[in-house]
Amino acid sequence: MEISVIIPVYNTEIQDVKSCLESIKTQTFTDYEIIIVDDGSKIAIAECLDDLAVKDKKISVYHKCNEGVSEARNYGVKKANGNYVLFADADDLFTSNALESAYQTITETNSDVAIGRILQTNRSDAKNMDVIVNPGTGRMLCLDDEKLRQEYAKHIFKKNCGSWGRNQDGWMFNFEGCWAHLIRKETALKIPFDKELSIAEDTLWALKLIENARICIVDNYWYYYIQNEYSVMNKFSSSIEKAITKAIKKITPIISRVDEEEICNAYRDWLFIKLKQIVFKYYLAEELNLTMQEKMKSIRKLMQSSVWTEALNLSHIKGKYKLKLLMYKTGFIIPLYNLKRW
View 1 (cartoon, rainbow, N blue to C red):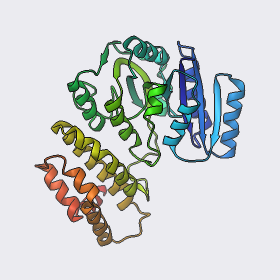
View 2 (cartoon, rainbow, N blue to C red):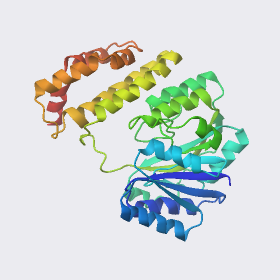
View 3 (cartoon, helix red, strand yellow):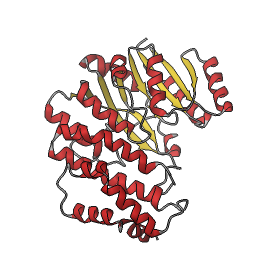
């Protein structure tokens, strides 16, 4: 067995799961297995997953209690029989030659990780994407040079930098996530996902990859990343502040070891994106029953914490960032964004 495709499922619509599986079944490369890790889904969905496995011998389904996507992926790796593993979200799709291109890339370059291109789209458009007009050039590039590895690390935080991609709405490569990554099983076992994180677990994992694995990228489309229409900016999350802070506490020491200005600046930009998510998904959500003064006081306390202070001190804050940081530190960013919403 060469490739194990690992798909965590947690109450995903069965029709979406079937679409994902169908995109794997139509692959030009056939030496694969599919491992579905049911992460505590409802009984009806769990039973549907079992039915899918009965109909296809390439599919194995494992049921476990809900522990989050990181632990589900780690569990799948342990169950994998393949020499290589490939992760997928249950509502995403593969291009028809994804596995063949991935296998060819990783074997020809003797890499630990091979990464292909991603196309970000929505569910309705994905139905019409059986053929990509421009599948890519097939050119391979191994990140053996330190400059290339630094460019990779920078791209984890800032999608529009360097030669890797245009911007987050038109990804060419996505190094921050684990999608379109074919990984040696032994490498995946050595670099598991951090089960303590519910946000930015992919970011931390990607940084550990660049430190501990040989990576090669290929200019071929492998993966359709389907945007979830329910993932809106102002969707309430009561845990987002603590979850992001926990992730930053683990990521900052890695960035401080790199000590490269452009990477630190890219990390700074990423931190401000995460702060904005905290404001919109928590402080400005209708579900949060706090006065404006209480919200401002709370975010001031967050900005004074050692985790955020240390993280933001890694780069030189100047210009627009200096003003933006001041707005967060004083708490005035909350009424400002509240006005902009209207």
